[in-house]
Image 1 (cartoon, rainbow, N blue to C red):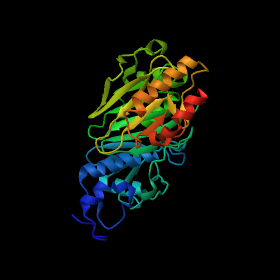
Image 2: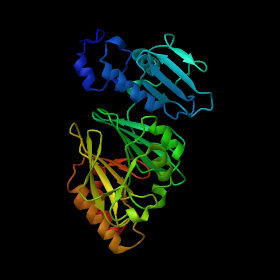
Image 3: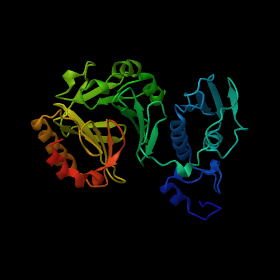
Image 4: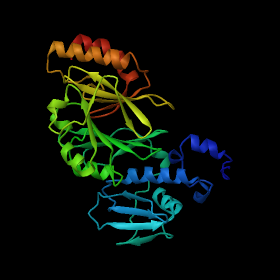
Length: 335
C-alpha cells in the first residue's frame, strides 16, 4: 500500500507514527488498518480530554466501540456516532463531521491542532490538559494536579488497553476523567508523602484498582497496600513490564519505576527522588542525602543510558544524560 500523494510506502508511514505527520495527506482513512484507526482515535481522545474548550463528548462507532473526550467546558454532554474512520477524520481535522450524527446538541468544535505538532514535551500545568507520550507499546499521559503541582502518570498498554496510574496525588475528578470508562487495573504510589496520595482512596473506590507501594513506605500511606513492591520487583500493565528500584533517602521506601522499552530508550518514573537539577529533598540530613545520591547513582545512572527519559513527581521531565554531568556538583553541595 502506498501514499498516492507522496509515494511513501505505507509501512514507513506506520513506522514514523502517523499522528506525528498529517493524517490528511494523500490516502483514504477507510484504507487504514482497523487497529491503527482505533489506536489513533485513542490518542486523539486522550489529547482532547479535559480540554477547556471542549464539552464532555462520547464518540460511538457502529460496532459499539466508544471513546470519551473533552470535559473541560461546562456545555451539555453530547454523543457523536459514526464509523471509526469518520470519527477519526473529525478528531484530526480532516473531515467536517457531516457524516456523523449527534445526540444532545451540536457537533463540538475541536481545537484544530496540526498533528505533526503533536509531539510530547512533558510540560503540563494544573487545570490544563494532559500531555501524551506515545510509545510503540505504551501510551503515557501526564497531568498536573493539586496545590503542590504534582505530576500523575496514566500508563496504557496499547495491545490490551489495560491501564495503570502512578501517584493518585490530588484532584480525583481530574484523574478519573483521564482514566475514562476503561478504568485502571492498578495504582502505584511512589512514596509515603501526603501530596502523592490525596486522591488515592477515591480513585481506588471508583475503579477497584489494586494498590502498590514500596515495602518500607506502605505503612505511611493511609490506603491499604495490596502489593508490597520489592527492589527489582516487577509490575505489569497489560503486556508491558515495569521494574521497581528502591531509593532510600527522600523517604525510607521510595520506588522508581523503569520501563525498558524494547523499541527505544528506557523510561523512568522517579517520584520525588530525581528531578532536573538534583535529587529529592533530604531535609539537610547528610546521611539521608548520601543514601539517596548513592541509590540514584548505582541503581539509575549506572544501569541506564543517557537517553533514558525521566518523569519526575513534580515539574518538567529530563533525561539521565542531561543530569549526569551534574552528579559531582550535587555531591559537593550536599543536596
